[in-house]
Image (cartoon, rainbow, N blue to C red; front, top):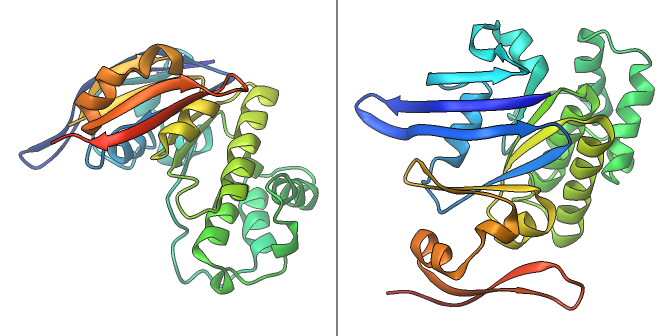
Length: 253
């Protein structure tokens, strides 16, 4: 299974947001991180993949034209997680996950729903009302809903933005585990470049609606690119455990 993006463009009226984005086939079993500065087009690209933005270009999953699918079928295959759950949902946490699983006809929905919560370490929230949760907790529940559905492609918009360090790692580890165990593909918008470097198999660097670089983190992350895209003086080194890390020294004028 692979996702192929070719010459994808999005415009809001006369304002062009994405300019002919093309990427090599993104394979199953991998986590792809979309990185870049604010306004680079990362979330717009993710929403376009989910069918939430009008786009030009081609998008295929296993050779099938995704843009020809109905929205319901497309969302079953490419499931989108926004930055926050919409407000005003009068359901409990477990009930909100079960509702989606029952509509999809999933067998043993209670078992599947509770396992999704357990993977993220939030099974204690099962009986809480959604309206009583913090922003970070709601973000974790949104991811649990997505993992329980087990789509072929996970589209995650800043899945760690409202989380503390512990849950950032829980989320990224859970996504990697699910992707590798079930041969899925995850595409995630991440602002933390070090989190992306340590967990992603592939980085896509966007700037002003264009792909500046793409490839394995060790191939993409270079001081020259960080200066050009982010406007910072930075070093790219490996820590004592061999993990790639970006050390930012200063902002460039």
